[in-house]
Image 1 (tube, rainbow, N blue to C red):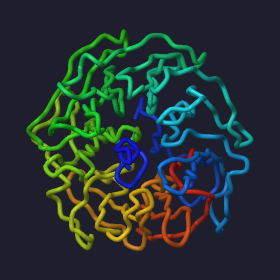
Image 2 (cartoon, one colour):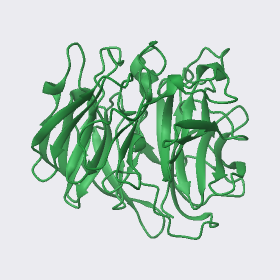
Image 3 (cartoon, rainbow, N blue to C red):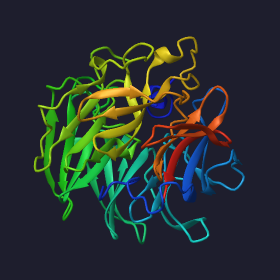
Length: 407
């Protein structure tokens, strides 16, 4: 079993310029209609391969069952990327494939996905993240190639390339992960993975570039916090900005595989371009009440809503200890993380899921969770004000892997 599959697909892996910004709510909090985008993953029996599908919905209630019959094909092992401009980027298979194109869609007035253009990507690129600097300039990570491609979103043509291979540490690849733009600076997480797609040491590193001309500013590095892998490479929301202008990022460590190579939350304060050594939130040292096993190994999908509150899916293999298939084990659990007070709470009444079914997104005044649980594949939600949980809102064909609401 390839660790790269485990890292980015299975249960072990599984903003101004960041894609998939769920903060803009334009309708009444009680509305459940509107433009909704979600994806599903249909796996082969072993769970390590399969197909992805991208769908739209105008209603998300009443126990409706959505099939993939009218879906847009989506690369297996990748999530769509939605930007504040309304552009929706769809990637090819993360592990390769025949259709090596980055496609740009918009959601039209009829709530249908409308293709606006595509751009050919290099082979074996593992493209995963897009951030837009302007209407005419964006960046896409080609993670397996240690490469960023600068392109024009309107014409979907390449402008230039940024090679980050010279930022590798010994014995690893730089592996650019999630990105964010703040104050005219592009922050690029450097995962520094070895041939087994694992970190070799507890280090957090970023490459910084001037957005105006793509010139290299510097590489920053921290080894004092005691955890590794500064973002989850396929989750663009694993780096985000709070109301104070501070950048926080979800560090996945070794996903619990290697003792001592831990996971946690770190930050870069507003006005600074260095990792804050005074802020330490190590997940392997933060006990979670009523969690089987007491501690999370890492956080998968996460969505920051403000006030220091981050909703997420936490991973703990102790949740399903008898299931030996990493891809199907129900080992991820809905949680609320207080990034200011450094605490984690389980959302009571929400079902467990496997590593494919980790869709998350804000819809009105609710946080919607995709779930591939023992009873159904579909979506549940928690009210952000009252904490009320609603399960099995709708069901889907396959595992619900992505959710985004334009409302």
